[in-house]
Amino acid sequence: MQITVNVNGADYSRDVEARLLLIHFLRDDLGLTGSHWGCDTSNCGACVVWLDDTPVKSCTVLAAMADGRRVRTVEGLAAAGQLDPIQQGFAECHGLQCGFCTPGMMMTSRWLLDRSPDPSPEEIREALSGQICRCTGYENIVRSVLWASKHPDGRVDTAGDAVEDAE
Ligand code: FES
Ligand code: FES
Image 1 (tube, rainbow, N blue to C red):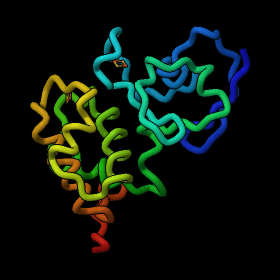
Image 2: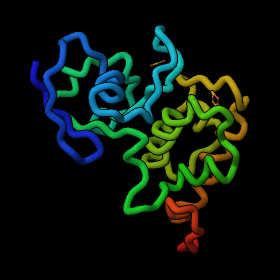
Image 3: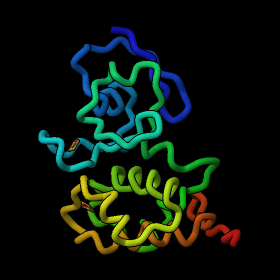
């Protein structure tokens, strides 16, 4: 079937099988491999992307269900050569080790901060409760999100040069 999905602001039209999952559409058809496929049980959350404005596990969504809709992936976080504060927070606070869970963690965290700019650690843990990290013990992930909440304008450019915090 023919579908057109807007991914990170660009329209992509493809002929896909009706059974194709969104995670495979993103990774295999579009080459957007930032979103990870980590389980067969819908438990890990490494595949989280936004469908319209809601985080979803893209292994539970058919590509056909995204037809005519907007998808935002981790590749869409940085803008105009600037990392999103949530990306900088993970870097500043060592919010990752292997990094496999990180794209999904960042997408849910960004969603949370857009709705709750100053979340408590408990709110962050609740928001991320559907996602699994095998490495960090979660402490530094929570610190990373808190850092981003305290530095909404803090960022570094993608070449790694520090940018003055606007605060
Ligand atoms: S790949 Fe594990 S929840 Fe989607
Ligand atoms: S950093 Fe390895 S799974 Fe989270």
